[in-house]
Length: 322
Image (cartoon, rainbow, N blue to C red; front, side):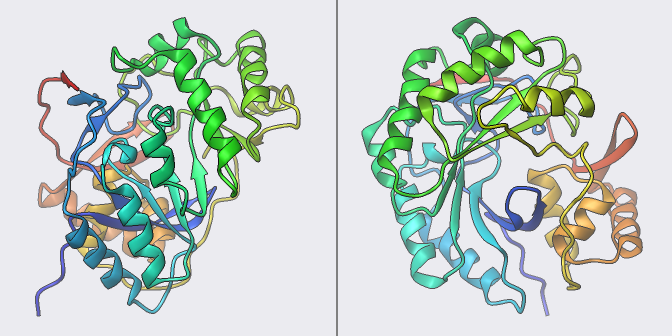
């Protein structure tokens, strides 16, 4: 019997924000509106603001349904993946299709760059939770950290997130990703806090580099300083960085090599992260990852004191469109 290989669905991922989160990938690697210096997936190869039907909605929903037929339901189905999910013109149809098949809540993890569009806003209204991001308090640092498409303006982006948050009747959790020596200072965090008072999300969640980033110069803010910076927000932000203790454990389960590869293709993980997300014992996780490396299907990347596993990728040149 052949093992089903999933093209658009991965995980569940052990997430500090969402528990066990089943990921859904709506765009090809790496189609995005940003080329963030800290991105765990590397450089953006298709920098665009063009909305399109990047992957077939019917095929994607069929994979979600097959995954949800398993014995252990995730805590969330999360639209995220290897780029910016709101670039998919049919994201509203995806949200509606998932909600017809399950009571598991649907979260959308987005960089927030397309929320100025009323069409994009309308397509997300049936989601249960939105998780946008804001990594800089001014246009200069926005360009430095996020390296957006040339047609994305900082003020329009911030105002788009704020307008969506006002219209959306459900929670918005805003992620702020801080970089040591760049945005991870009291002065820059205060600028961010001033902006976020205009947005008024239900939560502000602080993060920093924990997986191998796109640019080697993107460095993590130490945990003790991250905790101090969280107190500058009103109310205080929640720290979600993996540098803090307390990961999410998963119930025991089974996972194929295809499941492991689908997970680390989108989200580089430690052996512990793979075990927690897919319900494997840590020793089995480590052995399976070692076997995948021996077969040339996975590689290891060291980040500070941790070893991450990811799939082998080619490195196509970066291009812009839209």
